[in-house]
Image 1 (cartoon, one colour):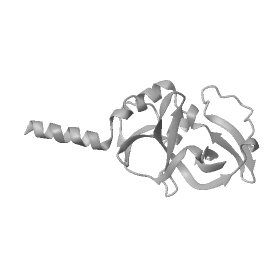
Image 2 (cartoon, one colour):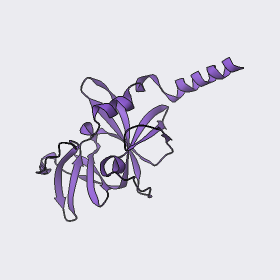
Image 3 (cartoon, helix red, strand yellow):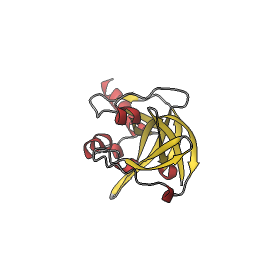
Image 4 (tube, helix red, strand yellow):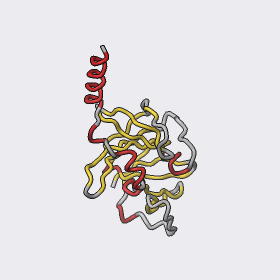
Length: 170
């Protein structure tokens, strides 16, 4: 499996790239007030509005630092019985990938019931890397906030509605 290496604070984490659509530079996003901690807002990806989560803020409680190596990982978020959605994950120091056999990851040995997204670990000469399991990242209330009406809105159909509204005011 190919993994993308990144950091949260001083610790290293990885994402399985099999569900990654693209790794993007940081783009402008539209903030959404009164959403869950760590949810930055929405950004436009080829005509689709994609929710953006700051993993550092979501997991550690502090915003990501915007360095040259800070990236948006466009993740194909999938749940059983639900259509695949794109989810943007803002991560720091996303500059390396590595190949590993899934069996090389070992259980962390610590159960964190409030953080089911913390997956197994692997060690290298620089220390421990923990896998983030994105499918377990979002609690149901956050999924509802982010994806409730996502199928109905793209930049094209919203632009059409705005244009129609503007004509109605004339």
